[in-house]
Image 1 (tube, rainbow, N blue to C red):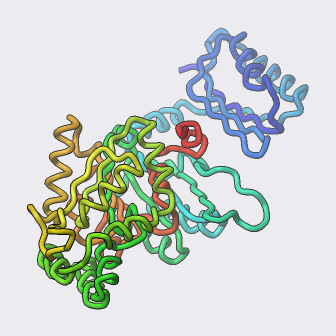
Image 2: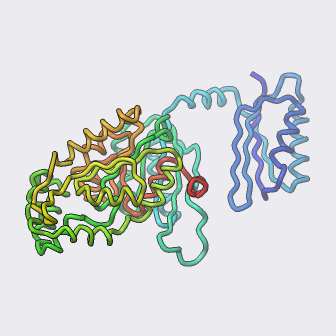
Image 3: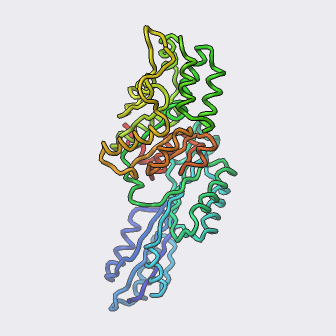
Length: 407
């Protein structure tokens, strides 16, 4: 093997620096083994790992690069790399890679210190750190600000369960979200996103809103909470709640639909996903009437929910057809994946309740969104601090690409 040099250049960013450095290297016919470059606040950092041909005078290359850097006002460091060190680096490329995504309203040094300490404790190496969120102005944070940093890490992870628990402990202590994924081919190749509706796409439990108008709000809310916590069977609880709505006028559905509040980030997320060619679905344990309303408003592709039985403009207290419970949601997700001709690894499922866990568990990416504690602990990923559009960060999309994708 020929001589290997690691050239690192840093200083104020300016046009033509990379072209100038590589032009010098080209004069000496070097091979580029690796190259990386980043710019933070108009300050450039670049590294080039090169192999020198046997006929090349190494010192001439060093002198030429030094002279160019001096003319450009840049700092340069050139270090030899041993064949043994290079061989060890090459062997490392086969190691598993993971992505850790930090989500918060703002990024602090304490957050980064705690996350990177966990990474170090589990003997993983950080290959790269990227900010996916937009630039934040000084002073008071804008309303609903978003901040995201993505870590690319590599190495043998002996106990992924322990690593995930350590990250969750940090997330809980600092009131942030930390997602941990294997960096595989499916991460940026998802094609279908399925959402729960109540308390996920909308900031309400529709059945509770209807119950309030029917004068049975307290009874229905108590049953809803027990069901969402997984304390009672969803189908049983659902029939019990619907029966309490008997006699409610159909006009109440129109009233509730007119005041539904879309969850933070939902419209931006759906618009971006559609622009990127994703298919979207609502798989809801709520009612078809409201799911169709959301489908029209957001442009969803599929809707599956429960059909509330109405006769002569009055709710009967019954539902038509099979109830969309947890098992039914999982079956529907499999059905949609088959219809779309995709693998379940290419599916994202998002929900907040215990009845969402079956579909979250079979999706390639299952996300508990502002979920109950049981669901949050059981799901592979969770988002609690930001809106639904934080899902785009988990897919690796920065704000720059999101803004480009939006109409």
